Length: 277
Image (tube, rainbow, N blue to C red; front, side, top):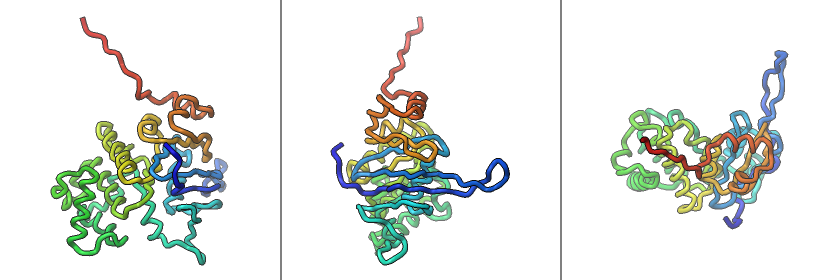
């Protein structure tokens, strides 16, 4: 896709945690090691790697859900500061950057209806104020994420919904604030295989129809290939390869990338069936 405005960027970001060494003492774990990554308007970047590679840590840093040791986050080219004279208020940032979490069973309040869950986001960010406005926008958002007819879902509780339906409610809640960026952290990994493709297709619709930029965090090369324009491969806290998805798939340069791709099913492969005689 043609290069467009950089909406969100990590610039030389390092994140460390204190952990236990094998000797029993304390040690420092570097989860993100001088990571730089750009997300352009309307594109999908797949951040891929095995568990523990630092993918979610980077996503949480971009979502301002964790401190960074060094480096900076930039939104529309401006450094994001939560303190000082040029600080940005968290609610202003979250009005543009939203995170979709891996676990749709834990990310929604099971004691609140869909009406309340989405309506609260609308009111908190000033996207709707009156009861009538909130209801209308909530119904529209449910239609957008293909929970139809919306009137049958608006007063339901998450506990009465399937995992796929809950994840769609989570996406609708994120869309309520009209963000420019979605950080989707393994959004299909806890869903049945049969409904994963529906969520991926929904994300693809959102970027095409709304111009939303998506960072798609996954360990699944096949889904990354299906959805993304570019791929960023993370290994031991470092980005070891970044480029156009198909180019990386067909011409991987790093040994770790070759291992990931070699272990992934090829979506273009067709299984030949032989007739029983």
